[in-house]
Amino acid sequence: MPGITKWRFLLLTTVIILSALQNGFAVEEKEQRLVSPILLENAGLKILWENVLPARTGENLERLLILGDYIYVISDKNYMLSLDRKNGERAFGRVVAPSGVKITDMSLYNDRIISVVGSKLFEIDPNTGTESIVLSVDFGIICPAVRNSLFYYLSGSDRRLHTLKADSKVEVFNVAAENDSMITTILAGETFVVFGTDKGNIISIAPDLPKRLWQFDASAAISGKIVRDGVSLFFASGDMNVYRLDMVGTPEKRRLVWKYQTDGILNTAPRVTRGVVYQVVYGKGLTAIDKNNGTFLWSVPGGVEFLAEADNKAYVITKDETLVIMDNTEKKRLSSINVTGVTRYAANLVDSKIYIADKSGKIACIQPLQ
View (cartoon, rainbow, N blue to C red):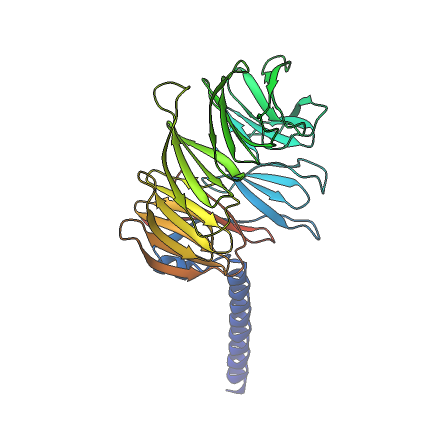
């Protein structure tokens, strides 16, 4: 009997130790989760994939960028990781610029990422990360470079728009706004080019020669990029208004469809979806505007970014790290969940997936339950 009792005691002790270890691992695993799956499920969401990205000591995740089939994670040391948007698998990782050097937002043209660092224009293969210098110019490049099938368009620190042949990289012409304002954003199509300035000008020119097609003037600087949706152009201005211009008939014609006055400073571009324009108003929150007629739909106080849209629902993150779900049809808040620690995110205008992360490198892709 004493032997049996001793055996039972050892068995019980072993069970307790194993249980404690399992609980410890469970806590550790739970601490690794960026967002609670239970909270997400209660809000009609689920985690599609998660990843913990490698980071060097003192290095933080700085921003997320969606381009095509990949999401790009850029650190504050200019290390970039490319992840497959479907499953979070790593495509490549590399330093894209020296630490401390500013990288403008990147753009995607066909199968190449266009990137600007200082006075150099790069192209990056999105599958392998292979980088090639397209050209180096003798002026600073102010905003993201763009291109069409025949030309690159660069905004120079000399306040001119430089047009270069895509094949030979030879400059064919350059233009400037009549008021000598700085060109802060460029949009290139095959039949027109549009650029915005820090004095509120929106100017359209022919893509292959210095011919002005039309000009529209807001009363303050254009904030962020100009967004094209079909024949419509959407943009925000420092005059507190969001605008919709339509290019009608021929490239030489345009008309103001609507402008919506917000209640604060606008320093970012609007996010445009099938039926809604989402605009962050600095220090106020995020406002949703009817895309067709420019009328108010709803607002989220403290909202700092639109994340995604699914059916009639919009997902917004706030400065106090809350994920808010809004109903665009009923124009009301449906629910919200705590996402403490989530300080990095990307606006997804392609599908309903939500991409969020923290500065340490935890990243998750979330999608609505089917």
